[in-house]
Image (cartoon, helix red, strand yellow):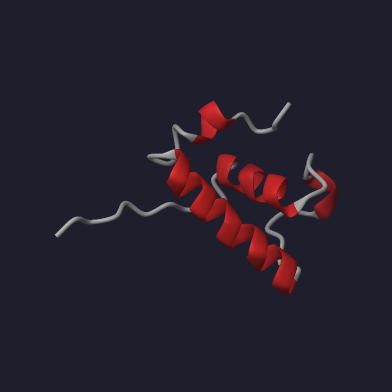
Length: 69
């Protein structure tokens, strides 16, 4: 089972596509720079994709609304 649940994350972002985009960017940052916003022992997931989702759920990643002009 995926943690955190996708349904909870979709309350934070507007679509599955935006969720994938945000999580992929953050997980790549984690991989490239070894930059984590929590202590590595605090994560439930061992993989960066799951860790990025956990950060999003905990509010450590701020999502800005896109302005349509």
